[in-house]
Image (cartoon, rainbow over all chains, first blue to last red; front, side, top):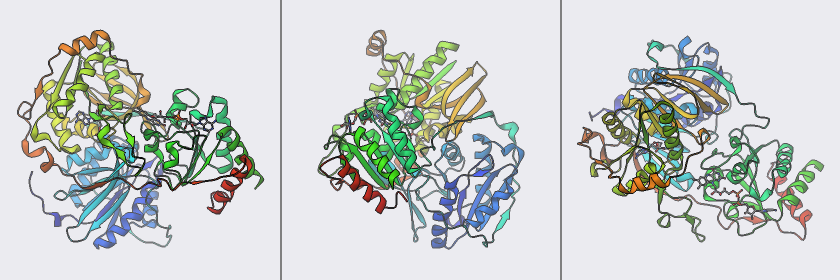
Length: 335
Length: 263
Ligand SMILES: Cc1cc2nc3c(=O)[nH]c(=O)nc-3n(C[C@H](O)[C@H](O)[C@H](O)COP(=O)(O)OP(=O)(O)OC[C@H]3O[C@@H](n4cnc5c(N)ncnc54)[C@H](O)[C@@H]3O)c2cc1C
Ligand SMILES: Nc1ncnc2c1ncn2[C@@H]1O[C@H](COP(=O)(O)O)[C@@H](O)[C@H]1O
């Protein structure tokens, strides 16, 4: 592989994500962390924004910490497209040579960043939850969980640039929005040629969920096989409702048909890291822990005091969920 | 139709035990198995063949013992299996793995390549889309349903955080699949018999004309500088004791109120 001159590469880039004109919050969070790393490296923090009719969003990115926004506004960028987006970002990176390039570890980020990394001959670290910088070598330490969170790894990309990572949502802190912040909006001349794309988005079908999306929620109340029957999910929903949270579930509950798969937390479900996770009648199998153990506070309610869920919980009640959960809901309602 | 399915051998988390002293995984007790997501990829490959005809080839890159999961794939009904195994490939990251797989897939010949959503050891979900870039074909990740498929085109539903994107692509294409897409079949008796007799070809990097300067630990862009087991609350849980439900609930209520969880 041809040697590159690492010093040719400068600046921290956040590839922002927007869908239908709304910026994903992970973009602001990454700007927050990016600001810290860019300041340490004494370089610029830039956001990259692709889409159509989205110029108004560029200023938002500046207010959240970007010095610059590279904006590409083009009709063919209206919908996310793996091939078009990855070509555009790779072209931009070849043009400006950023030293570090991040995007959110979302469905979109995880779909197209790998393609960009191959085009750029760069390494890519998935789903990072921490970043540190080594100022001597200007190497980025990319910290990430593997093995469903049972192992942590610190990854470096010593010889290639840019240093690319996707980063987990709700881990990094966004800066306070600063309405007075000024920055530059740059509109680079990049060829967008949609005729080259062989895949095309036909339509979007919104999933109408009555409850809050669990990956977004600050509080999740989850139910497992310990609930005993589907009807008992009602008390989980009621507790979630008084707390303003979302409803999660173990695979056992999902496989029993008590609740749809979209609520499943764990290795083969969703990974969540809310402020509070309340596990009701869930044993805490490794595959379940994989999806929720990075929650700030874990509360377990289980009749078996030996249940492994207590090994990751901060607080717990040993007892029958069918008594505890309704009593807790009532107590909260009473205030 | 030339259908290829990529499968990986991973530690078996169903048998993994947590050390009660430290809260860490006892990995040595684990054993290995096929990456659970790859079963859905195999099933969808078989269903696609049942619809359009052709042949399904399963491939894995790994140590010689990774043969076991290929035997399983044959048991389920794939026609052929290939083990990509070479000392020079050891320690490859997702970039190098995707490169090597793409060279092997080119040699096999392909119309559709199926991948699992992610492997449960590395959890990266990067090998599928990266391979598609090396193959210079479109990729659609996190597919939960194939709506329509023929020799030239495929229409799929892709799982996003807020719903479903319906995407149409020309063939050849790379698809990575999620659990919702199907219910994987079990190995059949006939399949198991066939697997017993089937001699799995082993390809090294020379067989696939891969550049040895692009594979293996030392040519991988990313490097693991350090790894460790995360600290857990282990043994530090505060149990809300009480004579009855009300007392326990009252204690928990006060606790969550203190923490500002309820206003
Ligand atoms: C490859 C693979 C992937 C997997 N992926 C996932 C995943 O993504 N998510 C996931 O959750 N699981 C996953 N699993 C399954 C996992 O191994 C467990 O089987 C599952 O999490 C168990 O769910 P549970 O805790 O609800 O049920 P159980 O293990 O049956 O536990 C029920 C618990 O409820 C308690 N209980 C019973 N009655 C009461 C009561 N009245 N009051 C209070 N407590 C009570 C019991 O003490 C017990 O601890 C996976 C498994 C495999 C092999
Ligand atoms: N060594 C490998 N050999 C064959 N397929 C692989 C290998 N590693 C990953 N894959 C495939 O790529 C998918 C995603 O894996 P990963 O990117 O490692 O999370 C898996 O579900 C497999 O289909």
